[in-house]
Amino acid sequence: MSHLSGASSPDLQVSADPIAFDDCGESGARNGKMHISRPPVQPGQIEKIIDARRLRASFFDSDLFADPAWDMLLDLYRAHLAQQRICVTSVCFGAGVPVSTALRWLNALEQRNLAKRSQDPLDGRRFFVALTDEGASAMAKYFSATKPLAI
Image (cartoon, rainbow, N blue to C red):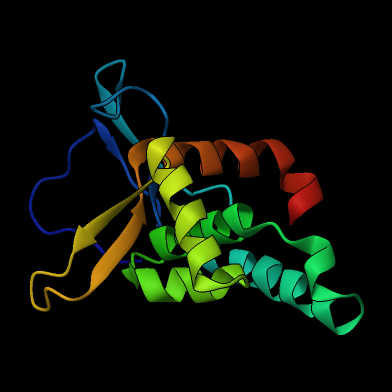
């Protein structure tokens, strides 16, 4: 566990685990205190879910389980938890459908304010995709509600 130098604040509660802010308002403050807690799922657990979904193609026709929006959300949530950037090409590939189909689903996620694209400031030809705050919150709530089932 790392220690912070300087005076500690009694209003800040920090764990050694990867952090996520509780859903307690825009500022993250509840009763004058900032609460930082462990997310309902870890990036490695999301990776296992993604791997298991891909493994189905070894046993069943791959088109039987087409669910590109969910595959994209899983990939984006894994990246969000790991604090990694992910490019549009990677998200499309991870969806397991043709690029044109994946882009339509990505547009649908953007229209629902679950994901957003942003241009790479170092390479204008590349775009990154990330969950919006609303998308990250929805995924966290989903995994909190289904933790006994999904993990």
